[in-house]
Image (cartoon, rainbow, N blue to C red; front, side):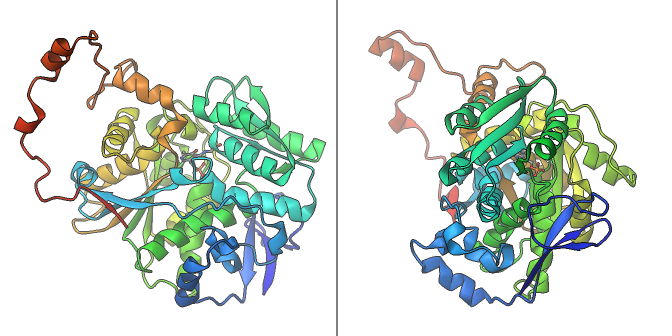
Length: 439
Ligand code: F0G
């Protein structure tokens, strides 16, 4: 088995050392693993291996992700193994009968970032790094802070001041990262952290680091394994800095290459309207990304100058994929439907469902096609927006699925009055439908 870091610009190969840019042309690197063989049966057998590193939904696929690493260096929190759900209300909302939700918010720090971070931090341990860092809209920083502290490594995060959700900032601080609040947006933080990493010898763990992408591939591996190695027709995912789109495309190409799946799913990368440079590039056929000033209530994907656009465009091409954009209103409508189905997610995650709905309406997703939406983060990440939505306090947003609390005096007659009917008189509206199905 050979492992190298290959430049996606000039093709130069490097030994897997602590670099994240090509030493020749400064291009982005990707991990290349050759001569791997693994079967569906072996991967299925590992599902019952109990408390070993194979019980992680990332390290179960170790040969496909980081074959070099010794087991004792793996820093894992049993990430992955996230639920796959269907719900009749969500299907009805989107117009897609076979719609799955893969809930990556069920990861240990509440987002899909843990999949890339377990690999990134394990690599930092392998390299003997003392300090790790990233720029973040909040989820990467929470994940980095947690895994670094588990490993006993110091961490620093650069976050855009006032533009990260409360749950994420509090997690990041509590896990012990040094938090640097930049008076600017994510793109400013991303630029500065790269300079700081070079100058200060910090191991950079944004998804510009190719090992992060390797870990994130596991989301697609696990999704397809849960579906009994059957590909869905589509995988819809929210797109910001574009690491995830890059990772899922790489994972799918590898699955096809290894003969683990027959059919290539199509990726739909969904951006927020106010932060959609990748959509603009794809739609207009630009040869390079044209940065924008980002504005969206979905703060996780409020990114105007995504670093991984080149790799992500390859993912779209390789999977015959599409790029879509949705408004904040559409995102919050979709979120309210996911939330009230008992599943819940953070705003950015709901862009996947909003995008799927739009693509179904435009008949790009065809009648009868199956769709897996990736819910990238937990509902508890951004409690403020959820509350403000249900109190109808968001400017420019129509709270169509509002569920405000009702203030009632501490008096049983008043409560009966507010409640109205006796519950026993209510019709059984669920009928024979099982609304939530867990796969
Ligand atoms: N969904 C959530 C919840 C995210 O936190 C992010 C990115 C994305 C989707 C988009 O993924 O960047 O790979 O295209 N969050 C990063 C962060 C930027 O810093 O936590 P992407």
